[in-house]
Image (cartoon, rainbow, N blue to C red; front, side, top):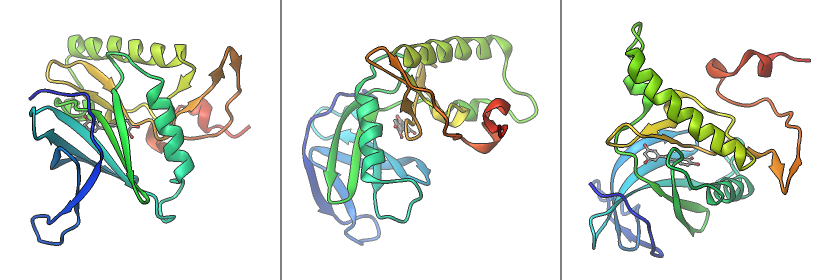
Length: 204
Ligand code: PIT
Protein backbone atom coordinates (compact mmCIF):
# COMPACT_ATOMS: atom_id res chain seq x y z
CA UNK A 1 0.00 0.00 0.00
CA UNK A 2 1.22 3.51 -0.79
CA UNK A 3 1.98 5.97 1.99
CA UNK A 4 1.16 9.61 1.59
CA UNK A 5 1.39 13.28 2.27
CA UNK A 6 -1.96 14.69 3.30
CA UNK A 7 -4.24 17.58 2.65
CA UNK A 8 -7.89 17.90 3.64
CA UNK A 9 -10.18 19.39 6.22
CA UNK A 10 -12.29 17.95 8.95
CA UNK A 11 -14.78 16.17 9.14
CA UNK A 12 -17.97 14.42 8.55
CA UNK A 13 -19.74 12.10 10.96
CA UNK A 14 -20.61 8.67 9.68
CA UNK A 15 -22.15 5.64 11.38
CA UNK A 16 -19.64 3.02 12.45
CA UNK A 17 -20.13 -0.74 12.21
CA UNK A 18 -22.34 -0.79 15.28
CA UNK A 19 -24.40 2.10 13.95
CA UNK A 20 -23.46 4.47 16.74
CA UNK A 21 -22.73 7.29 14.30
CA UNK A 22 -19.53 8.26 16.09
CA UNK A 23 -16.79 7.37 13.60
CA UNK A 24 -15.28 10.62 12.40
CA UNK A 25 -13.86 11.04 8.95
CA UNK A 26 -11.19 13.47 7.94
CA UNK A 27 -12.58 14.62 4.63
CA UNK A 28 -11.28 12.60 1.71
CA UNK A 29 -9.82 9.89 3.96
CA UNK A 30 -11.55 6.72 5.07
CA UNK A 31 -10.69 5.32 8.47
CA UNK A 32 -9.80 1.63 8.55
CA UNK A 33 -8.46 -0.60 11.34
CA UNK A 34 -6.90 0.54 14.60
CA UNK A 35 -3.09 0.35 14.44
CA UNK A 36 -2.42 1.08 18.06
CA UNK A 37 -4.00 2.17 21.32
CA UNK A 38 -2.57 3.87 24.33
CA UNK A 39 -3.44 6.03 27.31
CA UNK A 40 -3.55 9.02 24.89
CA UNK A 41 -6.18 7.59 22.50
CA UNK A 42 -5.74 5.58 19.34
CA UNK A 43 -3.97 5.46 15.99
CA UNK A 44 -5.98 4.40 12.96
CA UNK A 45 -5.06 3.60 9.41
CA UNK A 46 -6.70 6.00 6.94
CA UNK A 47 -6.82 5.55 3.18
CA UNK A 48 -7.17 8.40 0.71
CA UNK A 49 -10.38 7.77 -1.21
CA UNK A 50 -8.96 9.26 -4.38
CA UNK A 51 -5.40 7.91 -4.55
CA UNK A 52 -5.44 4.91 -2.20
CA UNK A 53 -2.51 6.43 -0.26
CA UNK A 54 -2.26 5.47 3.40
CA UNK A 55 -1.59 7.53 6.50
CA UNK A 56 -1.73 6.77 10.21
CA UNK A 57 -4.05 9.10 12.13
CA UNK A 58 -3.49 9.61 15.83
CA UNK A 59 -6.81 10.61 17.40
CA UNK A 60 -6.68 12.26 20.78
CA UNK A 61 -9.48 13.90 22.72
CA UNK A 62 -8.45 16.33 25.44
CA UNK A 63 -11.13 15.90 28.08
CA UNK A 64 -9.31 16.63 31.30
CA UNK A 65 -9.50 12.96 32.32
CA UNK A 66 -6.23 11.77 30.80
CA UNK A 67 -3.28 12.54 32.99
CA UNK A 68 -0.84 15.04 31.50
CA UNK A 69 -2.80 15.44 28.27
CA UNK A 70 -3.70 19.05 27.59
CA UNK A 71 -4.18 21.30 24.58
CA UNK A 72 -0.77 22.70 25.45
CA UNK A 73 0.91 19.26 25.49
CA UNK A 74 -0.69 18.38 22.14
CA UNK A 75 0.47 21.69 20.65
CA UNK A 76 4.00 20.97 21.91
CA UNK A 77 3.97 17.48 20.37
CA UNK A 78 2.83 18.91 17.02
CA UNK A 79 5.40 21.69 17.19
CA UNK A 80 8.18 19.13 17.70
CA UNK A 81 6.86 16.84 14.95
CA UNK A 82 6.91 19.80 12.55
CA UNK A 83 10.63 20.35 13.23
CA UNK A 84 11.56 16.85 12.09
CA UNK A 85 12.24 15.31 8.70
CA UNK A 86 14.42 12.20 8.58
CA UNK A 87 14.14 8.67 7.14
CA UNK A 88 14.28 7.15 10.62
CA UNK A 89 11.69 9.44 12.20
CA UNK A 90 7.97 9.11 11.51
CA UNK A 91 6.83 11.95 9.26
CA UNK A 92 4.15 14.43 10.23
CA UNK A 93 1.84 15.51 7.42
CA UNK A 94 -0.65 17.77 9.15
CA UNK A 95 -3.21 18.25 11.85
CA UNK A 96 -6.96 18.71 12.07
CA UNK A 97 -8.96 19.59 15.14
CA UNK A 98 -12.63 19.23 15.82
CA UNK A 99 -13.60 20.66 19.17
CA UNK A 100 -11.31 18.96 21.68
CA UNK A 101 -10.37 16.15 19.32
CA UNK A 102 -7.03 16.29 17.52
CA UNK A 103 -6.25 14.28 14.40
CA UNK A 104 -2.53 14.02 13.69
CA UNK A 105 -1.81 12.74 10.18
CA UNK A 106 1.38 10.70 10.24
CA UNK A 107 3.45 8.46 8.02
CA UNK A 108 2.07 4.94 7.84
CA UNK A 109 4.69 2.39 8.89
CA UNK A 110 3.25 -0.88 7.65
CA UNK A 111 5.81 -3.20 9.27
CA UNK A 112 4.48 -2.80 12.81
CA UNK A 113 6.46 -2.37 16.02
CA UNK A 114 10.02 -3.53 16.69
CA UNK A 115 8.56 -4.96 19.89
CA UNK A 116 6.85 -7.70 17.86
CA UNK A 117 10.13 -8.70 16.23
CA UNK A 118 11.70 -9.58 19.58
CA UNK A 119 11.11 -13.21 20.49
CA UNK A 120 10.51 -13.85 24.19
CA UNK A 121 13.59 -15.47 25.79
CA UNK A 122 15.39 -15.48 22.43
CA UNK A 123 15.67 -11.86 21.38
CA UNK A 124 16.67 -11.41 17.79
CA UNK A 125 19.21 -12.62 15.30
CA UNK A 126 22.34 -10.44 15.89
CA UNK A 127 22.61 -9.31 12.26
CA UNK A 128 19.05 -8.05 12.33
CA UNK A 129 19.54 -6.37 15.73
CA UNK A 130 22.60 -4.61 14.27
CA UNK A 131 20.54 -3.46 11.26
CA UNK A 132 17.84 -1.97 13.52
CA UNK A 133 20.28 -0.50 16.06
CA UNK A 134 22.29 1.44 13.46
CA UNK A 135 19.12 3.02 12.12
CA UNK A 136 17.90 3.79 15.64
CA UNK A 137 21.21 5.55 16.37
CA UNK A 138 20.87 7.51 13.12
CA UNK A 139 17.39 8.63 14.12
CA UNK A 140 18.35 9.55 17.70
CA UNK A 141 21.46 11.38 16.50
CA UNK A 142 19.23 13.39 14.15
CA UNK A 143 16.75 14.21 16.95
CA UNK A 144 19.59 15.43 19.17
CA UNK A 145 21.03 17.48 16.28
CA UNK A 146 17.64 19.24 16.15
CA UNK A 147 17.71 19.78 19.93
CA UNK A 148 14.96 17.23 20.61
CA UNK A 149 15.05 14.65 23.42
CA UNK A 150 12.52 11.88 22.77
CA UNK A 151 12.48 10.59 26.38
CA UNK A 152 10.49 7.42 25.70
CA UNK A 153 12.55 5.31 23.32
CA UNK A 154 11.37 1.71 23.60
CA UNK A 155 10.60 -1.14 21.17
CA UNK A 156 6.89 -0.21 21.13
CA UNK A 157 7.75 3.26 19.82
CA UNK A 158 10.12 2.02 17.14
CA UNK A 159 8.02 1.31 14.08
CA UNK A 160 9.11 -0.40 10.87
CA UNK A 161 8.08 0.06 7.29
CA UNK A 162 7.66 -2.77 4.79
CA UNK A 163 11.43 -3.05 4.18
CA UNK A 164 12.47 -2.87 7.86
CA UNK A 165 13.32 0.84 7.92
CA UNK A 166 13.21 2.12 11.50
CA UNK A 167 10.71 4.95 12.17
CA UNK A 168 10.96 6.53 15.62
CA UNK A 169 7.45 7.46 16.78
CA UNK A 170 5.44 8.87 19.68
CA UNK A 171 6.75 12.28 20.61
CA UNK A 172 4.20 12.70 23.42
CA UNK A 173 6.94 12.92 26.08
CA UNK A 174 9.55 14.65 23.99
CA UNK A 175 10.94 18.09 24.64
CA UNK A 176 13.38 20.63 23.24
CA UNK A 177 16.70 20.82 25.11
CA UNK A 178 18.45 23.20 22.72
CA UNK A 179 16.88 26.23 21.08
CA UNK A 180 18.80 28.71 18.91
CA UNK A 181 22.08 27.29 20.22
CA UNK A 182 21.13 27.71 23.86
CA UNK A 183 20.98 24.52 25.95
CA UNK A 184 18.46 23.87 28.69
CA UNK A 185 19.14 21.33 31.43
CA UNK A 186 16.28 18.84 31.71
CA UNK A 187 15.25 17.65 35.15
CA UNK A 188 11.87 15.96 34.65
CA UNK A 189 12.05 12.23 35.32
CA UNK A 190 9.93 10.59 32.65
CA UNK A 191 9.66 7.57 30.39
CA UNK A 192 8.17 4.10 30.77
CA UNK A 193 9.18 2.49 34.10
CA UNK A 194 10.66 -0.84 32.84
CA UNK A 195 12.77 1.03 30.28
CA UNK A 196 13.96 4.00 32.32
CA UNK A 197 17.76 4.26 32.56
CA UNK A 198 19.08 3.82 36.12
CA UNK A 199 20.66 7.27 36.13
CA UNK A 200 17.23 8.79 35.41
CA UNK A 201 15.58 6.80 38.24
CA UNK A 202 18.10 7.60 40.95
CA UNK A 203 16.81 10.29 43.25
CA UNK A 204 19.56 12.80 43.97
C1 PIT B 1 2.06 4.38 12.32
C2 PIT B 1 1.61 3.15 12.78
C3 PIT B 1 1.31 3.04 14.13
C4 PIT B 1 1.43 4.09 14.99
C5 PIT B 1 1.87 5.31 14.51
C6 PIT B 1 2.19 5.47 13.17
C7 PIT B 1 2.01 6.39 15.46
C8 PIT B 1 2.84 7.38 15.28
C9 PIT B 1 3.05 8.51 16.15
C10 PIT B 1 2.48 8.70 17.40
C11 PIT B 1 2.77 9.83 18.13
C12 PIT B 1 3.63 10.79 17.64
C13 PIT B 1 4.21 10.61 16.40
C14 PIT B 1 3.92 9.47 15.68
O1 PIT B 1 3.91 11.89 18.39
O2 PIT B 1 0.91 1.84 14.60
O3 PIT B 1 2.36 4.51 11.00
O4 PIT B 1 2.26 10.06 19.36
